[in-house]
Amino acid sequence: MLSYLEGYDVINTANRIFGFDGWDYHVQKLEEVGDGLITAVVRVYVRNPFDAVSTPPIFREDVGIGTGAKDANGKEKAYKEAVTDG
Image 1 (spheres, rainbow, N blue to C red):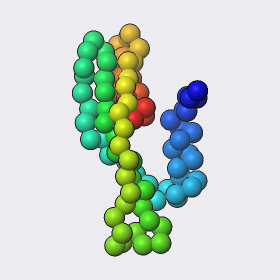
Image 2 (cartoon, rainbow, N blue to C red):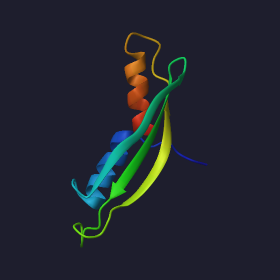
Image 3 (cartoon, one colour):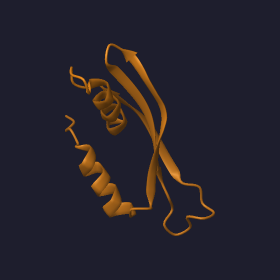
């Protein structure tokens, strides 16, 4: 069984473990695939703390989905949801 993780908890944990400048993310792809349904492909990078200059960062990539709320800000919320979920 999987538990839901809040985005801010994941960010705070990554900052605590890797340091504020020890990791990063990049949105590879962001698109609307249906009525208010947004998908985001997000790549997370972790740098080698002992050799951040010559060692390439390790990365993982996954897909997030956002549905947003059915109001005036729904699409914006869906984009944010998708990126955080990714």
